[in-house]
Length: 382
Ligand SMILES: [Zn+2]
Ligand SMILES: [Zn+2]
Image (cartoon, rainbow, N blue to C red):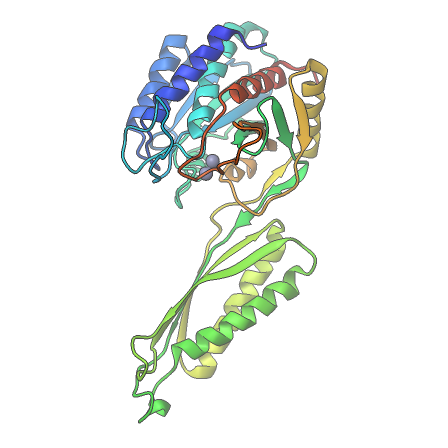
């Protein structure tokens, strides 16, 4: 059980972070708080892996496994609309995804790990990560900085406003999708649309053909496998009587099967080039992986369920996969692990405000169970 004084500590920290939300890689106040709390707890840490990152170390036995636990620390450019006594003090910024709770839970965990360091069955590293929400991933930066060297397993949690406090949730296998956004730009040639259309190269026409062809191609490649392909930007032209020389498409592309996605990307690039060639135009394609799929390791997820049940921590719900993405997957490219959810629902009867909304609100009681889950999992028997 988490003591009331420790829970109070976690709640206080969470509220301090909530008052002062910071964005992306620019987290000076948040990281200063994390570092000073780790110092007060007597924990060794490093800030060298990426800007605005902190990594804390527990145990240093080369014969033991090393488990990493990750918390993201960044907020969102959202104006908070809920009147809490610890409401955001920075206009236009809000911890609307609950990363303040993740950071606070990890600082609570640091206290437990320090107190029980001699009992630790493994080495533990705590990752305090910047920039989960932004296009430039903090997890990617930390992984490229070498944070996963020597780590055997990596886990994390995310709060879930649709689940009650006291409930935990985990999926086995495919959980959150990989993401590879497409940016396509057709380049043609302007001309008078009525007097001399034959002298122009119509970028909108090329893009239109590409729009339909890619929708069919992605279906051919994936068949029954899960994916999302959606063109959200289709922009071209300057005037009704001018042949458009530019047309831009942007698509979101989410999936679980990496190999199929790469096959689709290669085929898409060659088809786009074929379309451009046929019209005598050009095409530029950008299709970079922004994150990989979160695939929960079945064995470790099973161990999590078993320990939660044996220790009576909380009810563990079975979660199904979702097509949203999480940059936690970058760590999973280096070691197996899992992401579990913990419930923070406020009003059992009322309407739930989803994450990223300006009325997002956390039932802090849920943090107890996430902290206890990490503790029991780390100290649990195999
Ligand atoms: Zn978020
Ligand atoms: Zn989040």
